[in-house]
Image 1 (cartoon, rainbow, N blue to C red):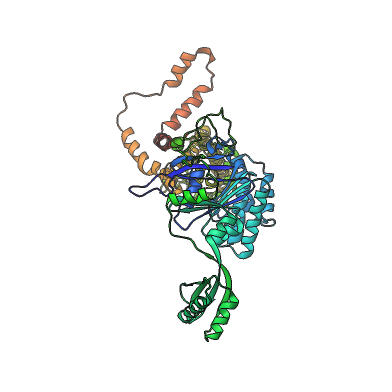
Image 2: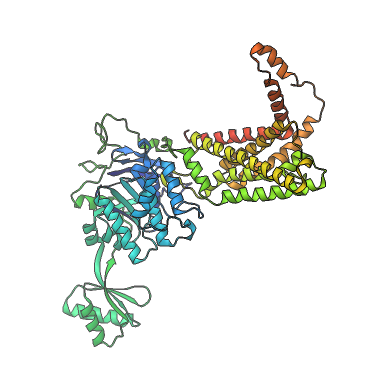
Length: 608
């Protein structure tokens, strides 16, 4: 049971709300159609139900609001348009990534693909799917958690007749299994044909809430559609003969050469056209839409009262619901002792956890697209090439040669690659929001941030090791091992190298997370050597009054005999690494980005 009570969207400027005090219900075991023309508030209603848009009102899913459901993907499946997935990701990779996000077993990915008829296309890229297969994948994403309720926005738009028939058979099967189905449409005939109940909207307000049979009887009626180049002559002839025979016939001239005749049949209209010598290009029985002009809420109230049934959220006396159940009562399926959240606090609700398995989700997101191995391969190729060119001259320092870092580049290729991979980790979330279907756009959660930082750091460390090994191997192969000696301070050099890569990766992650674009993450990485390092070099070139050179010795005196002998060497190396202008600048950038990330998350009332 889905109960929407008092849904009202937040108005923008001086405009009225897109959805205004909307109350209805969708029953289990039935398909409910949310009908209305374009701009009537259908999509906004779904987003208010899912708590994706700010507003008032509340929606109960089997007696519980969505923010109190432990696993939302197991309660509601959502399809709001195009599949929110990277075009280069495979169908299997997309569903397995969503399984990791929702804590669903990976076996459900194959089951969902099989249930929507995509068996055999598991390895195909999302960007190469035709419209029908794209909609099937969207339904597979909605069905992934085996939800009780399905919310679909215009699921049949643009589909062929065969695809549309398959779609509504699937929705009917889900409802027959005890599930709840709510979908939007702007076609009254579609609603009457495929739904059990029709909720009609106009201007964001409820117009009617009817059974499909009652809706078809009051809103739709049969007509004869005639196409003829002589519309006026045929209309006059049909009207004249109907008056002579005293038959209630209505003739309406549509756009172009189409004539709609209500209250007659094809045989009578064809005979009239033959007798008057009117040429007919098409003659067919149809079901016409007789939608009236926008009705007021009072009209909707009279219509509900005439059907002998109170609207959900309305008491028997006919008073409209205020957004809560009557005093002392709880909504259907809800424990009366359980506290209820008032509709006015809808914007301050705490969202459900998403993703449920952030580290597993981030790993599958990273390896599911070809851009990651492409970046790694490009970095290795460029770095080896630059290392060979620098080593040929014999002038560049060995660390710069091993890193493939000429003086004209602000950063070595490995650092740029690590920053790009880190920036894409959040940039792809905002460009292809895979988490939108479940809980909204890229939730700012500590678990998701830590997972991205951990995975990007691991990738940066692996990339740094690969680049160093590849450059060293190429140099020794081309120029000989005796010309490339291993320096004595290699531990400090390795620490500086890996610290630079991890810092760049984290700068990319945080920059893209704050500014919601991968380009912003790359810009944050480049800002370290281009802007901050020269500034710090000017500051550090001045006379120094104090120094931390004796810090290891003072710590040894403070700790006493427990101080390990090797700690002096490691601490000195760490201070030397951190004390460099690049290290200081990178630390400052990371601190600023982290504070900005936390501040913007709190500013948007995102709960951690």
